[in-house]
Length: 129
Image 1: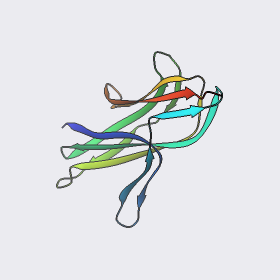
Image 2: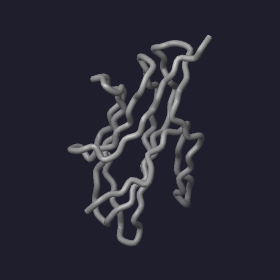
Image 3: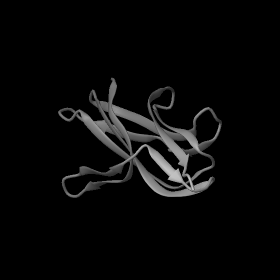
Image 4: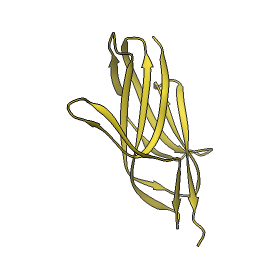
């Protein structure tokens, strides 16, 4: 069994519409600006779309400061199944009240619990006053 990552996106909000269960992604971004550090960001979503062979899978998402031991958020096991005839799966992790301690690069890492499968960068920047 293998997985291919179609995308890992950071956005303002993501949700599934009913009854079609279509994925809605609002306002993707890769930078956050703030006047001060540390600051508390009200919320964002991490969206992952994978394709793969039919079977059961487990993924984890971790957000951490690059080149640091500081972890901001770590999801538990997010299990899902890819059924025969449908080779894609969408996942949304809502991240609420995340405290960014300093400006710089933060990583959003997707793993299977044993190895890193995909990652993307989120940059925080202090605004000029």
